[in-house]
Image (cartoon, rainbow, N blue to C red; front, side, top):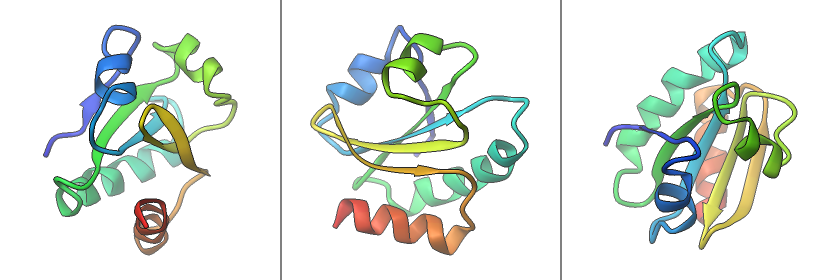
Length: 107
């Protein structure tokens, strides 16, 4: 499954109204750790297909969304269930830790 780019136009429909839990990767193109985390998020999106939707939100393009969810440091991962943030992680995580974070959030 492809990772969906979200912004002000589709955040509500793709994330807040999703029947499936959603992991949102808040990132920016100039962020080194974001560039390291991005491919790992892409990789695990295939493993969790059907269990978790994956979205990326560029904080430079969607400052209102980032601000409304308290994103002041990136990369920031937030898992939404039923339109609410249920888990969050700041900074880069290697693949095993990323999977552990996702597994615990889906628990």
